[in-house]
Image 1 (cartoon, rainbow, N blue to C red):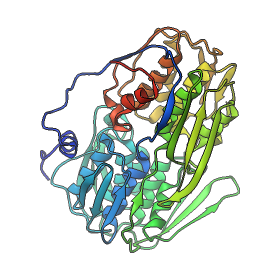
Image 2 (image 1 turned 135 degrees about the horizontal axis):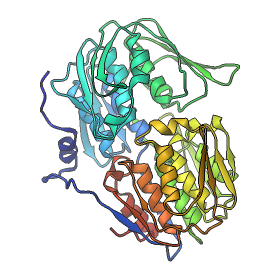
Image 3 (image 1 turned 90 degrees about the horizontal axis):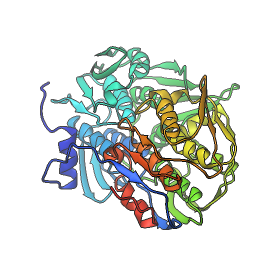
Image 4 (image 1 turned 90 degrees about the vertical axis):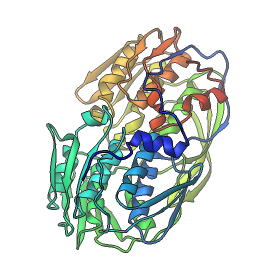
Length: 466
């Protein structure tokens, strides 16, 4: 293998037709309180989790897959570049529309350059499962944020396939993987609920003879299982008496290309939803949002808090439930969110904390330890975001408590985002209702998951101005 070739940033420029390198400078934002309600109808970008998986599975299927609604954020474009480096043909044919075909299970080629996964822990961990189960040597890296995040929790189970890993202390990127062409099937019980680890193990099992079995203590998002079935794999899921699930995959299936429609990302929809709930008089509709029950814990929690959030037009697209959301401004109150709900809303806790800050009473989010290993230590960063703007919090073990202000968030603070897109967007929503302006140190990396976020929010009347 050799270093060099197109970096992920260069690949992203090519996909978007850019002729000049993007600025490396930060894009700070100062957000002032909204002076009018948010109104309008919008669509949020395609689901990031499903977009990553669509590119990977299409590259392992026989034939040509057409994907519509693909999220074209920087993270997903890095996944497209990685699959090309492994021998797939992934071509953009229009906005969100891609044509993908690949060499198939067991036939990927050794990349001749380092695979740059950008900011995406999901892509890096899932792709580890594919790389560990192919007879090749590969190296993955990412941006500064991704290089700080631990990969050991996927390295440990994947090493049981016979693959070998070499990484920095703590299992951090860059990471070299020497995979096997004939990997061992795995029987693995997750110590902590994680859709990423579960998916990495199942992806490794695609090229293993026999059955791969994964037991999870709590049900986590099941996009991998749904997409495996969509492409023709045999996957069975049973519930355990303790409330978990056992997933069994029959190895070496004949995956056959099938078209995919990527629904709107519920994690992205969370930001305009909470903004509309908090800004007085707001009334918006978000069309075509994914409603997978293992992803909609935020919607349940907001309703528990008193949110006027209605779902209509429910349908199934590409094996995933989809619907339209009608959101109106609401007076929210504090709630206790049980730990078992955390996997269905783990990415939404920062914006939920913003909703809790504006609500009346105390909210307690139980069992949120997974936040410590996200793009940043999201637990510490969420606490810092709120306290910098006059909102009292408390961390007790793995629980986060937010003391609501009943609509009187002081604001006036500077939010350090630590290159975390969800923190930046959460801070922008807080600024719309805070009494004093909220400053955000950088919003440049919001494009990793929500391209055009600031512009889209401005169409509703947010009034964001750099």
